[in-house]
Amino acid sequence: MEVKKQLESDFLQAFKGKNELAVLVLRQIKTALTNAEIAKNRQALTEEEAIKVIKSEVKRRKDSAALYIQGGRPELADKENKEIEILAKYLPADLGEDVIIKKIAEIISQTGALGPPDTGKVMGLVMKALAGQADGNVVSRLVKEELGKIK
View 1 (cartoon, rainbow, N blue to C red):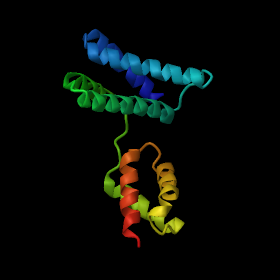
View 2: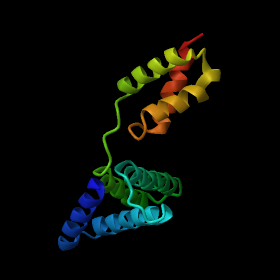
View 3: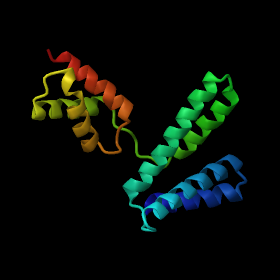
View 4: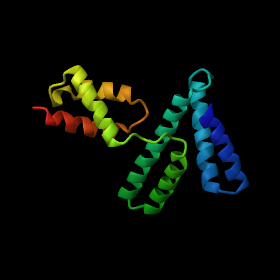
């Protein structure tokens, strides 16, 4: 598993370099991956499953950062954002909006979607087609925009 090997290598470098934040974050991710394997009856995670676990950790940190900002704790939000930067190295690059819009248009034409009431149907197919390559919030916004143009 490529991601897990990269995590282990980076963990050792951070540990030797005394980079406390990176060691902490990478240790947490290694634990999350191990917990996911245990939940899967100790079977090794596929690359996609490992990326899904890392994405969920990034999402959790983004949510925490937003809550810290709302609570007037920008220093903790900065720490969460630094952790997100560390984790971003292990995620594939998200697709650009233009690529997502093309895929949405393709699925709208395939399904014959007629407008906003078909959002759920189109969203499901787009997310399945772009599995792990695009943020769900971005896809949702673009699907709503594209379906809003149909009248």
